[in-house]
Length: 195
Image (cartoon, rainbow, N blue to C red; front, top):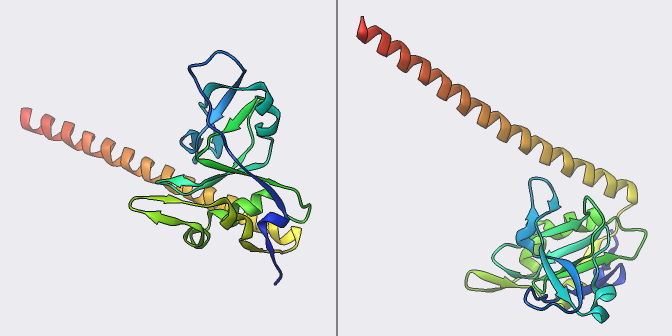
């Protein structure tokens, strides 16, 4: 199986800091990894911030950009697909990857970057936090498989997520039924005692 370096199939750029306390420049939505909702697979509640007009075009997020957390306590890669059009940028704790090669689906690259083995290979640990260098991500070799195989992997991942969601719902339903059952037993015991 052919391995190809990420730098050959994607453009990588660092996120940038944004400021809430200045009024000049352009207003944008500033996303951090903490704004990512894993349950819904989407970013929400980004912070309004300002960056200089000269930086806006260079740093705007596009559909299917990958956002990789490069420092912090939680390692994760997410696909940026907003529900509505917005001017948004990534924080400086994120690395933005924009796939430029038609042989690679962004979802497939996201899946590869989310694998625990990939995280372990990229991370430099320092106590409870980690750091990932852009150069390490750029030189990482990934398996180049057919688009059909990539689509199949993505579909299997979606099914696994759906299975986990259904299992969580089943657990909640079971707990609700248990609670209702014990409530009925308690009421019956109160009726029996009062007789």
